Length: 432
Image 1 (tube, one colour):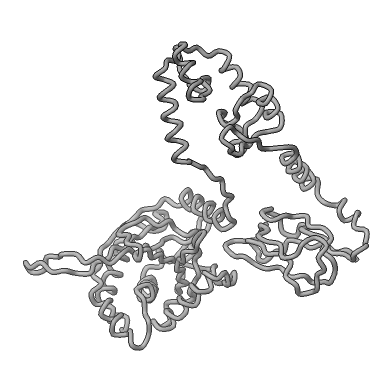
Image 2: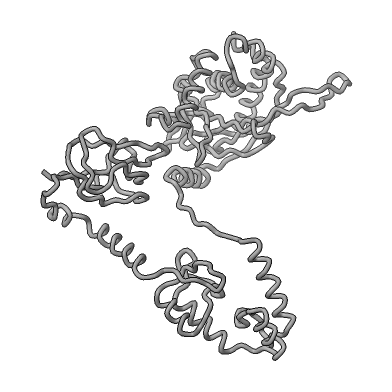
């Protein structure tokens, strides 16, 4: 019996998914448990298995299509089974989309310019260009993806008929194989204008400039939407403070024989403890209410090839340094290998983002909504400092705090950073 294969709903907030890959082709035999396709959701990629045996008779959603949850993406049936009734139930919007795609791909879309390059041009525009002996490489397309359309060719012909040039300019253009109508000038075109146009074209040809349109991945679109939402929602204030990491570096070296502790590990432990004394920085706004917490779920930003993801260390305020370190390493590894679970990237109350390893000394991080603050960690830089009249070199690091001013006043943010500085410069206080 024919069965629909639908876009699964993998979480309460999931509305749609993007088809990232089909592992099976139409008319392939499928067994229950075989991976059919993969989908990109909110920062995760999930493989979808078949629940039944059968033949993949029809793929309805292609790679790159964004499909609402529970909509049909394919039909599984017996080899000779009639699936016309199911196909007829495909939404009109999907049919219209398929028809539009067919119209766009119908007919020749390219022709060759004088230099052999392939030109993206519509069939009717190509026909008119051929009739008038026009090199399409001389025309700038205004259609989708720079495609040359009929109107572009018509305007080119009109401009060519109205051209005014000196005999010397016309002769120079013929010698250099230049379409003189491409030279834009209010008064008469002269020989010098032709030579300048030729030099500019030659430089452009040697540089081989190319604009490439690449569709955003689902992750990049989600990041774009959330950052825009955060920026327009929260009136933020930025705060910077410089801290001496001498003792933190010493502690790191002392612990090296026992554990590979990083600065991020130590900062997560320190910030988690300090946040308990500053619930506004660990809280959020919900309508006309503030949500304050007696626990910390620390988000740690991890850079991926095509975006950023923030795994969350739950209840980081009660975990030891070694436990935090092991959890960060595990979450980071699985984030980079697309193995995180949905619950491991949700529920954060505060975020730390560290780009100090890239040599950055100051930046302004954007709050990860619905949190109220985020801490940016910068590079540790050996800096000359005056102490008791003497110049000494100290490993100093800037911390960049961004806070939602609706919830966090300047004095609160300043006290938080001052307390954080005290703990970083005296990490032994963590033992108290």
